[in-house]
Amino acid sequence: MTSRQTDLKTIERLYRRHDGPGMRQALHAWYLKNQRRLPWRATRDPYRIWLSEVMLQQTQVKTVIPYWQRFTAAFPDVASLAAADPQTVLKLWEGLGYYRRAHHLMAAARAIVREWDGRLPAQREAFRRLPGVGDYIANAVMSIAFDQPWAVVDGNVKRVLARLFRLADPVNRPSSHARFQALADRLLDTADPSRHNQAVMELGALVCTPRQPACPTCPLATLCRANQEGVVDRYPVRDQKAAVPEHAMVAGVVTKKGKILLVRRPDEGFLAGLWEFPGGRCHKKETASDACGRLVAAQSGLKVAVGQPVARVRHAYTHFKITLDVLACRWESGRVRLDGPVAFRWMRRNELDNYPLPGAIKKVLPHLT
Image (tube, rainbow, N blue to C red; front, side, top):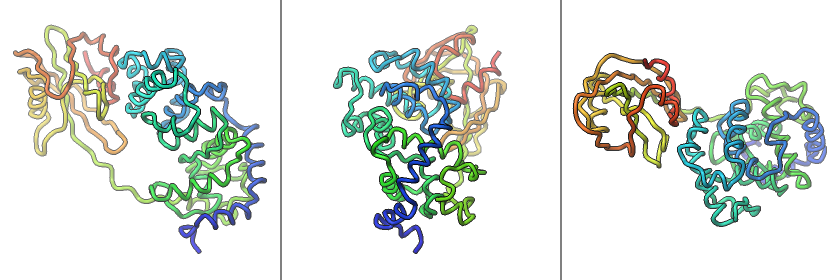
């Protein structure tokens, strides 16, 4: 029988075969000795734990730490976040990516103040209904902050389980998630769910890594089927992803009397609320200069003279990559009449950094004179 056929009865049999209680004991002992000293582990404040889990989605720990520290210094509790200016929040989030997380945090904070007197609800279903809170965030916060018996399943956990039990279910296939969740639920130490969940995730982050896992130091090495059978490198199984598309983009640095035009994206959608130079995607066989003139005129209503290239930058987003050609544009006539963007500012070069900018635009700034 292949592990694709693993059902709940098989999971129960695997659990018993692997000595579930002994597995948990070994894992917890390892965690107490080897866990990293992360700032959100020094608090039981549900707000700060929630914030860390949101920031850690799709983002490495070493990147998150300074952001979390700056964010909690600026917004020490839910009420201060709920009352914050969105542009200030986005500026603090700048560079962390996945900006929808910041918008969801603000919306959720306002709902918590409005409906829960500024305190995170300790009931999972109530917390789960907040903007941006999925099953993973709900389980993580309920278990770590409130010691409730909910098992978390993220990429680290899936990798550990896939190797431990030799599960052939592709970890990046949505239909596989229920299998991993069922096994994580069975393995959960309900007496100490906070420590248990963090221990499994920490094992995946420090020992059971995607490449070159440190199997000799793993507390579960003697229980791990992939390790015992010498096939660790085959797990976890992943479905092959389609090639990431690449788009040719342009942006115009429009100048008028020594100031530069910056426009703000709508408050919904991709890169919501961020500021950028007017521009967009090139048509096929369209030159960067022609595309720049077309897009600047369409978005701002201005007549401009497109000049020399300023920079070419490359940037990767979750599902696509861009090559961005940035060109100098001189204002010739007209008043700004926006179509697409929702706000604009004329500002000097040294003022640009005061606004929350997408990563690609941040890469352009050193090229501006």
